[in-house]
Image (cartoon, rainbow, N blue to C red; front, side, top):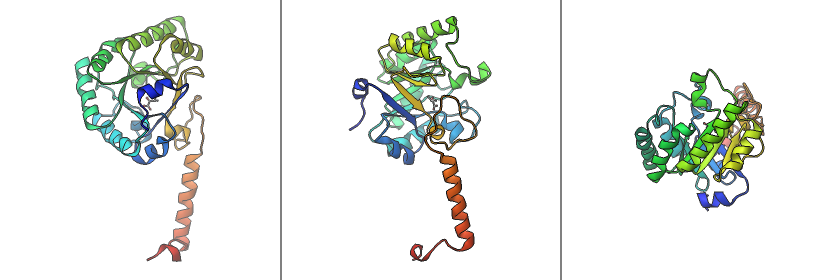
Amino acid sequence: MKNTLSRLYKKDKLTMITAYDALFAKLFDDIADIILVGDSLNMSFFGESDTLSATIDQMIYHTKAVCNGAKKAYIVTDMPFGTYNTPQKALENAIRIYKETKADAVKLEGGEEKAKTIKLLSDNAIAVVGHIGLMPQFSRSEGGYKVKGKDEISREKLLRDAKAIEEAGAVMLVIEGVKEEVAKEITKSVSIPTIGIGAGRYTKGQVLVWSDMLGFFDEFKPKFVRRYLDGAEIVRSAVRKYKDDVISGKFPGEEEIY
Ligand code: KIV
């Protein structure tokens, strides 16, 4: 049965994971409540050093693939950098995502300054997930990936952001890279579910990037990532074994030929 918002709202804890293709979306579908087609795909799938060059066409292509693989999970698609810098542009691009894919919601980064945009999208029947705290699309302008909520000014700003996003009609809120006690306070202060990444233990749900948590990206592990699989090493050793078998003539064998 499809995970609708009302079903998600009834759950105590929510599990969100990213996916960028049908193969992995199908594997995650029966387990995760929510699949995020994150613009992190520009880094982990496409090999860029940040998310900024992700395009709307790229997001639509990957969202279609994810929707082909996942029939049950609630599907959220990131609006990439530069596609929602005015409310009207956001509406046009979000409508494109809704028309061309089966995404259930779009996600956009930004706090109170994005409230008008979130309201316009919500008023036009598009479900919006907010994203506050460390916002990867701000990494270039802020000169890196900075944890938020470390001082009183930052804490107050985050609380204002969360409230404004909720009042604008967002259905969910991702909180990234925020001190645990501030993420806890935000979670208590809003009635929409909060989904944390690097935001401690008290958000309603958690999200991880699939290639980080399954260890396929093994060059660097942020503190908040738990690796549940040594994916990169498993793949490397399997491909090494395949190569050895080709060289030694063990592959293909009797049972693998016509
Ligand atoms: O793009 C992404 O994968 C995200 C998560 C890090 C929340 O936005």
